[in-house]
Image 1 (tube, helix red, strand yellow):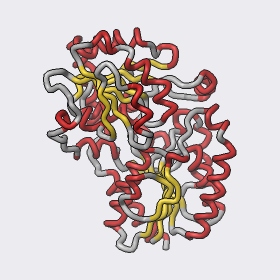
Image 2: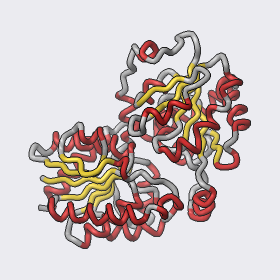
Image 3: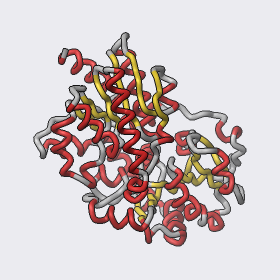
Length: 371
């Protein structure tokens, strides 16, 4: 069968690559065409556009890029018509992919959605559009199944791929030596995000606390989809930088400063005490406050339904607040134990499912039943 996938950012590329791998195991005749990244490309098939070309975040930032988005939408639609896939598989990335779902349904292309867009957080009215345009939805957060049930829409909860990846991870024994890390100094991990706009808003403030923690070494998790030269001005005062090795970093960290996103979940699954940070443009923040319907921004707190990790958002994201919280995360044993107890509950909620394999099995089954 022919599969057309759209993943518009780094985490989507990771999850879609695992799905491609499992689809090949389920369907020996599988042919792939996609918008994605390096990890998907390593699994074979044809990469149409890299997600680097699509990476825009925030309401204001997206509005100023609307002409580019329209151009990509039209190009993607033409490409799908020429390719004639058996199914369009959308991976998160709601702003672009929900429009593609609408179009594909109107043109008779079956639509599967792997990793629901976060409509439960900011635009619940879109559930009706998903019901109308998405044939099968595969969700990765436990509360999403119940959320969709409230709207009489049956989805498949297939476990969490991040939990699978952390469980399968084997640390690199040469990590410290390869990056010149001091084996006698504990590590504070800094995860500033994977998009340039995020990093510009977050990283300087995160690193401003360094003088108060000279007995630790700060290690920044960089991503290779950004130019390595971009990070050079952050390498000062002994700050170390590693690329595409967040799991190795977290497996050794004593605490972490984390930009809100999938990294908050990864950090929790490694059992690392963390503080969650987020800042965006003033306009984007004001619009977000008006439309976001959930009480937390970190996946840890959202899944558990209560505050387990501290969130510093917008004006609360200051070096002073970070410094005080980081001291607690490193020295207050009762506070650390409270966070880690929450992490244990989180792992139990997510379970162990091999999400990519389950999804591939169901997708092939549904497609064959529909033929």
